[in-house]
Image 1 (cartoon, rainbow, N blue to C red):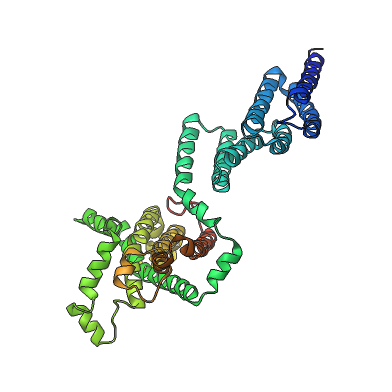
Image 2 (cartoon, rainbow, N blue to C red; image 1 turned 90 degrees about the horizontal axis):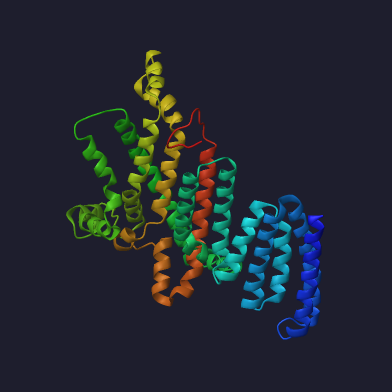
Length: 404
């Protein structure tokens, strides 16, 4: 009986409201629009009855409150009646599903409040809320959920400029930028040089990481601090240091030039700068991966007669492969993005970041934006493919560096 009284009250209230709109609100809501709204509200009322049946009066109060917020925001505030009609139908349909209702709220918040940054706001918020909802269903503690919310919001704030940049140019605009010969050359230089730099870093960094993980010696903390040094030094300082040591005016640079092995202002100089900035990213990650490999596996290998080098190749390196691969990916990403040292030490041939800077100086942000977007998309897709490839590496057990 109480349900039917509630439904009757909703019908009478709906009829009275639309009657008042027809009499006094014709300027804001024309009669035809009011008729469409009446039909939409019939559906909303039906959904409200379902909420009443499933959740009782407290659920209906929340349902009506959300409806009134939408009405006040879109009809009274923005005078967007047509948008209100669409969104209120969607709202009524998803109200009983918590995840969908949360995504709907984020959609409205992004596209009504945060214009003109709607998409780049909604996409990370929706992804973060989905993760938050899943963890909540798994029974995560409130403190953990609070930490996650703060962390995801901070991550969104950091990535927002990149998300905004990606959607500024159409596929046709980026394709037009890609067809330029200088853009293709710069992309090729960046991708090739960063790949070579990653190989060089791996050749020296992986043995160093293994040795650091399997030995203890006086001054080891100093060595670890020196590994981190390229991260701390401003990259413009790195460029000046490389110029002073390997530039044409230095003894070593002069000798290299006479031998035909000069690096300053050449492709080899780009690789040299990238090796410097990428080195610590691989070594630190690989060091953590090797430290996570239990020593008894290597002890068993040596007990069976395997030499230390064979043990490294067949036991330690495969078991730390995911962590080492992560270090290689990070080193490649750091190398391909390097600008400060390259622009001072080896500005030619043009790499991707240097080309973007050059275009910005010549024509401003509008002309350099498509090239920046293209470079971002190319590097992003390669980074994703590398991460997928890393997931296929053998993982006999979980490591701190390797993840899965």
